[in-house]
Amino acid sequence: MLDVIVLDDKQKELDNDDAKLVKKVLAFAFDFMQLKQNYEMSVNFVNDEKIHQINKEYRNTDRATDVISFALEESDRIHIDGVAEELGDLFISLDHAHAQAEEYLHSYNRELAYLAVHGFLHLLGYDHTRSQAAEDEMFGLQDKILEGYGLTK
Image (cartoon, rainbow, N blue to C red):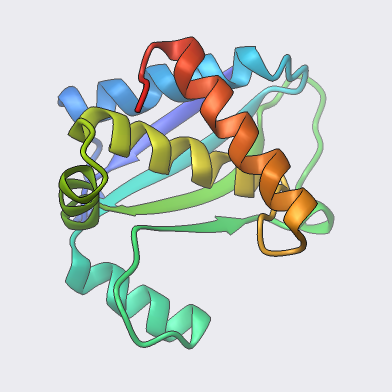
């Protein structure tokens, strides 16, 4: 099971259409990947200004971006039988999601789902920046998950 909490930029839990989509697509991704461990994670919806601040402070990159993932290192995770393991936190810029949906000529829902799945895979340890093979694997998996969910390009 995957427990996802979706928060706004004031750390209030959301239950709007965007939050529902992200929860559903991440639950689908969890099942698609046949994960056995119970996990929990947060998804934070922010604007470009906030994600720029986060990117600058934590990644030394002075620009806004679409999604940032903060995975808990395996050594920092607490393992208790029967208790969900914390994966980490995602920050998704809704400004970027809207702009990229237009740029890539697909729906906003597809872009938002893509960013959520992309971040989720990072939390699980996938890293497309390591090599071309790692990029092919991660992006291929993202596409399969989104296609399986019914969100195609």
